[in-house]
Length: 54
Image (cartoon, rainbow, N blue to C red; front, side, top):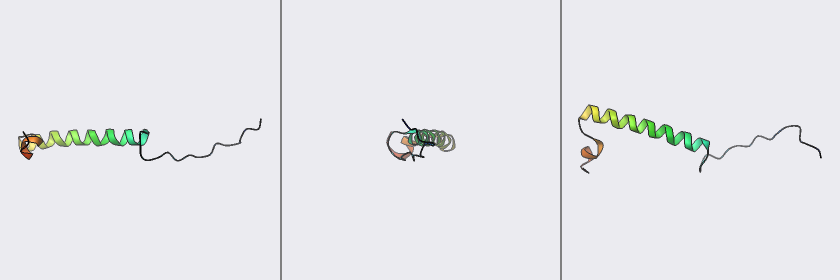
């Protein structure tokens, strides 16, 4: 059997459950968590209290 001399480059999709989406979602969650902590430290109340939901 003849094997190819090189492997073709495959572009990974940018949607669905893949490494890019998992990394992007994790980073977005970390930024949102830190932003919520900073918001609470600056205003003295949580985001839900600020929005009138709690």
